[in-house]
Image (cartoon, rainbow, N blue to C red; front, side, top):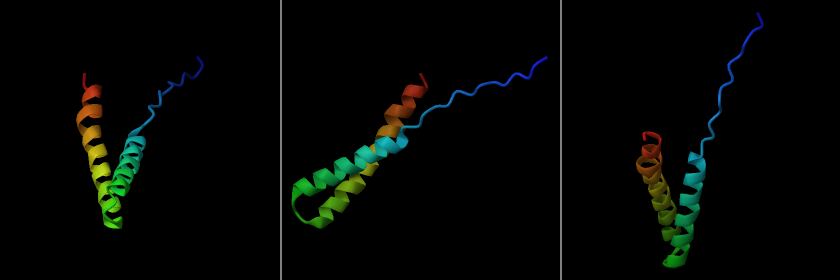
Length: 65
């Protein structure tokens, strides 16, 4: 009997893409505020936090259905 190998279906993880979009969007918004370079950093942090919230609430909830 031939050896049968089970093929494991690889799932692509898009978490890094969500974080990248959140970071770039936050940096862009921080630059548009035009109050100084500090707000660009603050916008980037808020963008990352928004991406984390989006992943934990909406994307993870979709898998449980």
